[in-house]
Image (cartoon, rainbow, N blue to C red):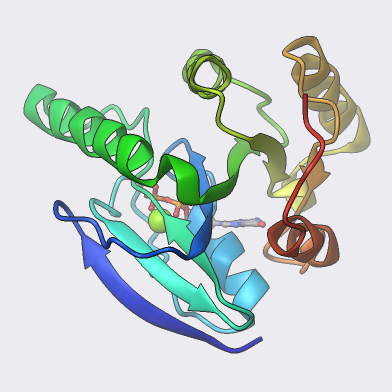
Length: 188
Ligand SMILES: Nc1nc2c(ncn2[C@@H]2O[C@H](COP(=O)(O)OP(=O)(O)OP(=O)(O)O)[C@@H](O)[C@H]2O)c(=O)[nH]1
Ligand SMILES: [Mg+2]
């Protein structure tokens, strides 16, 4: 899949009319890895240490949709100031780009299931009326029972059609592309 890196932003977000799909989730949940899996090459930086992506990284996918990799949340070793900066950046991003957001992929570790912070994120997106879809990550690390439990918990939160993925095994790529490329996704 052809894609190009458009830029890394900590303020002054790009103003264009393109549609975008956003990857949110806990630090280390696999946002950058999933973007790389979709594109088919390491275009987004993946690191062993969590909490490394501090900026909003934007990629343009062939077909004209942007993939937006935002900094993860819930990383313990982050100062109060950094947490405040994250919140400010996220609020600005979602306010400025609301009309361009086609879908927010809320990434959740398949083995762990939705955490308190994931729940807050989902509630916030719902409150703001922003289209979102749950994506379970690292399915290669979870057994069937754990995946079913995670899916069930998501259902309780009102998220029915979660996509199960593994960046390691290339699982779920087709479903992700379908969600990225369909202008409207039935979620609510
Ligand atoms: N086993 C397995 N490991 C994965 C998978 N996806 C990502 N990882 C690993 O999880 C770690 C974090 O992956 P990233 O893609 O950097 O996660 P991130 O959500 O972008 O993290 P931040 O940028 O810090 O918020 C890396 O060590 C990856 O190799 C997967 O599908 N399976
Ligand atoms: Mg990342």
